[in-house]
Structure formats: C-alpha cells, structure tokens
Image (cartoon, helix red, strand yellow):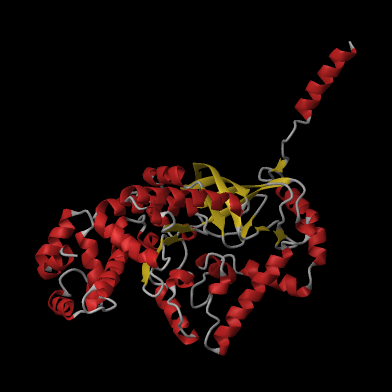
Length: 469
C-alpha cells in the first residue's frame, strides 16, 4: 500500500511540479495597473541603485525611442543599427561639434552597457516582452508588405516569404518592450512577442512604466509568424525567443560553409573554402543569409568557369573575400581603403554609406550590403555581385596587361570605347570608366538575353571588349 501511495504521490507531484519547465510570465491579459505595479516593484532595487547620471541617460534613451533619426541627427540606437553594433567604426569627427556628438553617444552606450551587469536587473522568472518593429529594422518599406489594391491587407506572398525565411537574427541595438503588451514604439506593423528566459539581465527604463530593455548583441530565434487585425489593418505577429548570439552565429557560419562548398564544387578549387563570408548583425539576419545563398548560386552559374576561377584566385592572392553584411558599408572595415588619413576616412565613410556594394581595390574585398535593395522592396539578386565582380576583372586584367595598369578600363583602348559609348547603357554606367566597365560586365553576364542584346546593340565595341576577356 505504501508503494502504491508513493507512486501516486510521484505522479501527482510530477503533474503539479513538472521537471525542467520554466515559469514564463505573460502579463498581457492581466489587470493593466496591477501588472505595471508588479514590474515596477520587481525592479525597485535596480532603480534605487541608479545614479543621477544613469537616470539622465535612460531618460534620453527613452525620449529617442520614437524620435526620427538620420545620419545628420543620429541617436544611439540608430547608430547601433547602421554600424551593426560596432560604434568603434564611427569616424571620430572633424569639427568640435561632431567630435562631441560621437563622444556623447559612445558614453551613453557604455553607461547602458554597464547597467546590464547589475544583479538587481536579473529576472528570476522568465516573461514575455511585447515590442513593435517597423520595416526599417529590415530596411524594407512597409508598403511592400501590403497589396496594391488594399493598403490594409497584407500580401500573401510576403507573409509566405517571411514564414519561410525569417528564422533568426541578432539585436545590434537595445530593444525596448512592454510585459503588459503596451509597446513603447508608436509605429510598427511587425509585433514581436519575445520569450525572455529566467536569469536574463534587463534594464528598467522608467520608474512609472513597465518598459524593459533587452541588451544589444542578443540572439533571437523566430518560432512562428501569424497574421492578426488591429484597428482594421492586418499586422504580423512574430513569436520569438531570446537565445545567445553564439547560437545565431553558428547558424550563419554553417550557411557560409555551405555557400563555399557550392563554390568549390563549381570551380573544382579547394582554395576557395573561405572566400565567401556572411557577417550579419541584424534582426533579419536569416533573410540576408537566404538571399546571399541564392545570389551566389546564380552568380557562379552565370560567370564562365575559367573567368570565375581567375577572378576568385585574384581575390584570394591577398586573402581577400566576398562578404555579405546587413549594415551600411562605410562602417565595414573591409570596405574602407587601407592607409587613408582621418579627413579622407570621414569623407570616404559618408560616400561608401550610399553604396549597395563595393570592391575595395587595396584589399581586394567585395562587400555587399544585403539591406540596400530594401529601398526598392526587393531582395538581392546576382547582378549586384556580377557588377562588383566586374570591378575585380577590371583590376585583374589591368595588372596582367602589357601596360601593367591598375585597371584595364584606364587603358587608351578602353578610354576610346568609353568616350564613344558611355551614354548608351544607363545613367550610372556613364559615371566614369570604372563603373561603365562594371555595368557592361553585369549586362553581359546577367543571364538575361535582353540585357546582353541591349549591350550588343547600344554599345557594340564594349560588347566585343567584354566578350574577349
């Protein structure tokens, strides 16, 4: 009888207190005032420890949550997004005003970083945090997610695309959310419900509100995506879970490895085992990883094998790489020329930030900004990579020519062709000889007969020049 009672007791205890089940609190459907008061009470010790300077920093941060930001008037989170969390890549500035602005933002960043080390900010039990993200987090206009006929109706294709590809990402900035579901962001059609595990360190933003901040450099895994209706407009609900950055980085590394294995299989050259690299730091990292895979697969099909091998060998000679990022290129070290002065770097950063792709001739690096295409609401395509690879071939053929020039496009022969046909392809091609060559290369190897025929008809001498490479 004792044995039976013991078994029953174990079973009942197992039902009431199951093993390995985390207590995750969800305040959304509870009494609002009581829920807010509970969060404020939980972080009372954290608030008591704050210095006046730290309170001022949090106040500034909170005021900037819904403030429009730009390169001309940036706030901390804006700069964390566009630099991928790498504030050290910011030019220090040339004027006293610029120097002070950068220094102030870096100080704000360090102050908030320090707050995440406080034991009083560590939650013992997990909770759900609600936050709104706008399409700017993925650098895609909100309008591209909705149908043309009805601005309140989401595109089924877009929803399918997100469900298939939005799997994981990284918060390069500090993400603010509300446990009670009253998101602090004024706009955002992407509503995130984030599972925060126990023992996570959070920052309480305001002693009168429930707003909590997730640390930057944190991984996020998407569990599901569904559609809901809010005030007559369809929105996207993303169920996500906080994970380590290392978890996300390992998945990105695996995709890089798969890309390189495909390149090796096509080129039959094992030297290229690390030539392609994904350096992703944003919440839409999995979207860029998927697009980069498709881009490279199509690219290596379109470029003739011998030319592909030659170009990649040329890059590899200087330990160069082809890198995909999801941030502005001016803040990517591989995109910046070597050995430039501070004033030159400041100017170069501003110029490069406008680029969707860049070939760094001094380092033999191609860097592609996966987010740049979002301004048109499109995904990346292989032609952007073909254009940058055209710069590689221009450089390679120039150095291997009889005249040993840096670029084949700077030879007298090509200068003559450029002068005659520079306005015959498109406006961008007429920028200079280098861009004309790269655009002609892109048209020739786009895989579209219409592009190739246009080049042949409108710029026949250029067509023949590219054909002979």
